[in-house]
Length: 196
Image (cartoon, rainbow, N blue to C red; front, side):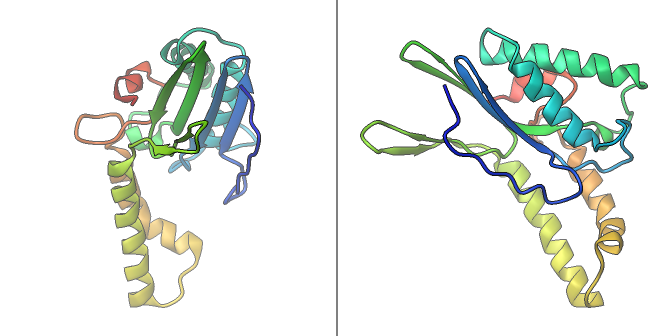
C-alpha cells in the first residue's frame, strides 16, 4: 500500500498529525491538541504521541488491533518513564486514527475518533465509513460557545478564548474512551474496544 497524496495544516506551533505507510498498511493519526502542560520536551504531547505511534506502526505486523496495541504499549512505556499517567483524562495524549491493512483481497480498517475514511472502488463508487459523530457534536458545541463569546465580548485573543473555553474542552475530553462518550487512540489499549 502507498500514499499517493497527503496534506496537513499544522494549525499551531507543532504538527500534531502523522501519516505513514509500510508494506501492507497505511495510516493517518490526528493528534488532539493538548489541554495541559506537555511533558515531552520540545513538542506537544499530542504531536509526540501521533508521531511516536506512526513510527511504531511502520515497524509492526499483524492485524490492525495488534499493531495499534503494540504501538500504544510502547508509547505508554516511554510516557510513563517521564512520570505517572495524568489523573485527569483530559490531560492524556490522544489522537484520532484510521489504520488500513490489506491481506490478499481483504481490506481491514480500524477507525477511532473523527478521522474520516472514504473507500473508492475500482468502478468509482465511493463509500464513506461512519464514525466520529459524538466527537463532532462536542466540537460543534465548543465552536458555538466561542462564537457566543465573541458576540458578547467582541474580538478576543486566542489566549483569552482558551482560558474561557478550557473548562468546556476539558469536560468534553473527559468523555474520552467511555461508554456514552467517544473513542480515540490513547495510552490505554482499552481504547481499542471502541474501534470501528
